[in-house]
Amino acid sequence: MTTGPKLRLGKTLVPGLLAVGLFGVMALITLNTAFEPMTTAAGAGFPDDISITAELGYALFGFDELQQIGGTEPFLAAVLLVAVALDAALDASLVLAKREDEGEPVSALASAGEEASTTGGPTPAVTDGGTDDSSAGTTGQSADAGGDGR
Amino acid sequence: MTVDVQYYVLLSMAVFCIGLFGVLTRRNALLFLMSVELMLNAANINLIAFAFYHGNLTGQLFALFIMALAAAEVAVGLGIILVLYRNFRDVDVTVPTTMRW
Image (cartoon, rainbow over all chains, first blue to last red; front, side, top):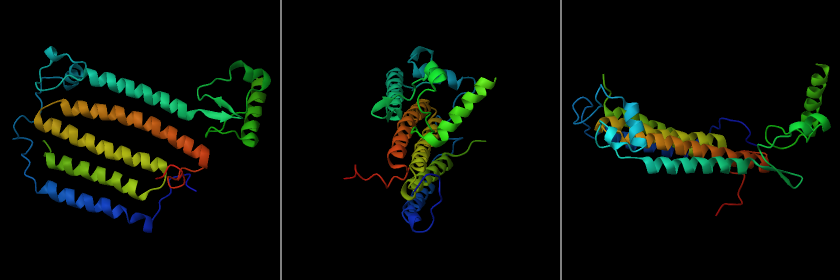
């Protein structure tokens, strides 16, 4: 059962030789490629008196006329697409985090609210999302008792 | 002092191959996710190094987009791992076999 980061040694490492071999081949190719040195390459580096962050911002939102470093495309459409993708990922993670409790779907962001304080509320969830009556129940009761005492 | 571009390429290859090594040898889904992140970040190193090499900001912007997509991937990946653990009481990627070819 894999529940924690366990280091597996022995035969499971054999496919990893493929990665080591790939690194060897790629390193050989890189070291035999004649890259120009960074100091003498044509157009290498950015001017000292220009804010790179500001330039990135202008390029992200498509303000071409404000840009001082030439040759950067406007990325406004890509920014909007990434925004939609991140939104979809957030929704997907919420859907995946939903669990079923006795046939009823329980949302990950559901709040037990005031019911919990009067009736004891639903069974407290343990960290993996399931319910564990033995441990979670006792901690819930002890928390209630502490609240009454104060 | 400016570091030459081939050393950046070597670094990114090393990071990529460490990620590939993790994907090939590990069975824990969380370590899988970390290895994929390493491979994505190897691409980022290359993009930023060559953006500087060519004096063009497009590579840096692409690296930003890759970071955003990596965040989306982690959100969905962690959700899948959560469901995996809930259904199998295990995060071993070799246990769920029903969706295999």
